[in-house]
Length: 310
Image (cartoon, rainbow, N blue to C red; front, top):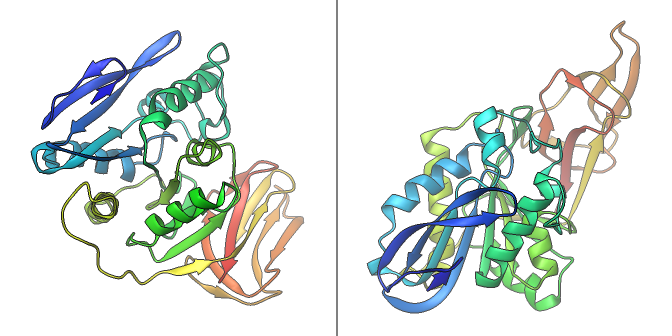
């Protein structure tokens, strides 16, 4: 296995620097299996306050034994390290851009664009499957789910969907996104998923354990690790509505995670500082609450709540 110019022998594990134009390299952990096989790429830390994924990948980097693998694994716990160490919500602190809206990248752009360029250049050519690990940020409560693509070529969509079905999350959500780490990979012909688990800027051992099991499930699915996966109890969400704030204000959600809501039901409202009601968010259809903003203060355009139906 050769990754970013570094050679790994069969059964070897190495930390490999992933070069970023005019910036410090990212730290990837590569495992070269004892036998040939496919390659799983798993990323975390695209957003600075989403902690379950980075912690799970740190743990897996030490637990996975390359001598027992048939294929390769590339783990990148921190795709946006300055945001992680600064506790920066949603953006690359150096330029204020959301890295998951910065694809395709630009080697001559601001840091977010250069990070996106580095990630797609190094990771996409290696991946038979890419999984990007996220959580609700420090301002978001979220129920575990996986986004799978519907905006790629049919074979890429189908391979991604088959992988999504082996995960332990209760919901799989159709996605038409194109400009994120995983969704741009799909546009480049790489099967990929975005897995969400945890939220509110918190992490727990239970959530990390579940995230690790999701990665192992993908490894078994790709036959990089031996053993199969049991049937998973998942519900596919075919339509999702994402409500955004129409202006800045005080946000008051009226529902909880995983709650069944009815068409017309009040999901939350936005007020001015003086108490004038600016916006009511009501369900456009019967559905299930997937995530919502817990922050009291929001800006115009900020996400407020997402709900969907099968």
